[in-house]
Image (tube, rainbow, N blue to C red; front, side):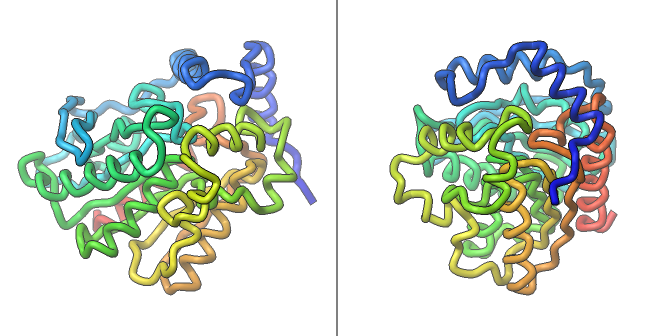
Length: 314
């Protein structure tokens, strides 16, 4: 039986309704990006302080990749986390997820490298995968020059970013390096086949991410229907999960992607991979970044920080 939305989420939805946000599936990618940027600017978040923030351009297989580095107030060498922002592989940016990245840096005491990967429809699958793994490989190779420990690296992402974090963790396993300490997946997309009861339960009226919005994202990201069965697009389809990095997986109860995260956690467990799984009752998609309006946003972020600190041996 479906539980009710948390009162704080109900208030968030009322605020969204008053702002007359347009449904994602009714916009062009450019319009949807502009709306998400505006929503991020409207949040009155006050992130934790970090020592410094700087950007670099690193080489990728198809050209330059922009990385924003968040440096913690700690003596080097520090652990490092490669961060992939959410947005359905179509929208979102380093700016929309800046506050979460700052909090992750300060809370986990780690260097955070936020990746400006290519997105659809201009750059369709697997462009984002190639950029994401290239960024992880570059950070591993250059960790010491950044004041980071190449033996203490993790990955983190939410939604589409959780998808990319899961995929690069599998790629790192297959490549034999880097040996990741943790993969942190927040309501990840793990199956672009869009199956699961949560797609029916929460198809509408539970925030901006509807079933139709997911179809819109999929159609802009993937170059064909057949691509949805490629494990690099849908990591739940990987042939094996054995030997992949330990995971923390967070889901929102009232989210079309709830079952994606739950099923991925179970698939990892079945392969003998250590998994910490946490469902947040009454929450919707994107709650993780809803600081300070939603208490569980900060609670979930703290859970991730603590998981990284344990994984890094702090």
